[in-house]
Image 1 (tube, helix red, strand yellow):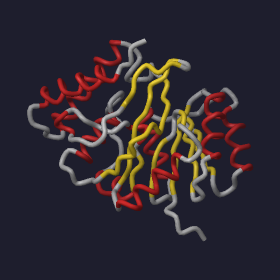
Image 2 (tube, one colour):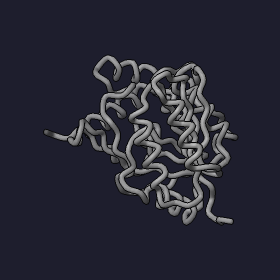
Image 3 (tube, helix red, strand yellow):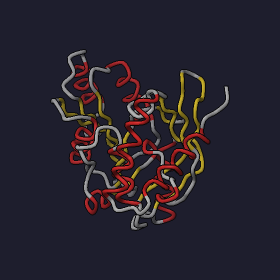
Amino acid sequence: MSTLPKVSVVTTTYNDKENLERIIGQVRRQTYENMEHIVVDGGSDDGTRELLERSEREAPGRFFWISEPDQGIYDAINKGIRMASGEIVGTCFDQYADDGVVARMVDVMVREGTDGVHGDLCYMDGDRVVRKWHQGQGSIRSGWMPGHPTLYLRREVYERFGLYRTDYRISGDYEFMVRILYRKEVRLSYLPEILIYMAHGGTSTGGLGAYVRSMLEGHRALKENRVPFAWVTDLCRVCRVLSQFVKR
């Protein structure tokens, strides 16, 4: 039996069979030995269910899924976390930089004895880098936060602080990170390399309107978690985001 901590990777999907097939393939190619992949489908009708059934047959005991309506992405992620049996839980919606990403993330967590790990990521428009997320370590009050797609946490963090709030539509991930990191009760390792390539134009990056809505929800997250002078943190966040964009 493997002595490596078990990692549960959660993917949520809805009527996106082609992209899901790509994600399943790349998770399966990760070199880390003790992994399971959990897919939470919102009740797709595009052939996703058949893909999930086939994937389960191909990876018995390592691939699990559920297909039913949900209340949005954060509700779906919560379902996946509840299904997870790993000591470490993360998500995968995008593209790992290579097949050894999860192995390196777990290695640094174990060596440093921390509660989680995060690293750098690139926002992509096709093959072009639009934005580079490189923040290192920092504090929530200064506008810093980990790149959520790179954030892998020990199960105990969810048990202690709870799951994602489903009354947030865009910034539930930010609210969760503020909740666990603002008071410095959770220690993260930082892996200073690109771990994830992420498509630009998602829920919180799809234009000015989406970004404004994201910032408004982010301000609410700061206020509800009692971060003082939330508007200062908002301004710092904006400055950090603007500094990440890459000139064409």
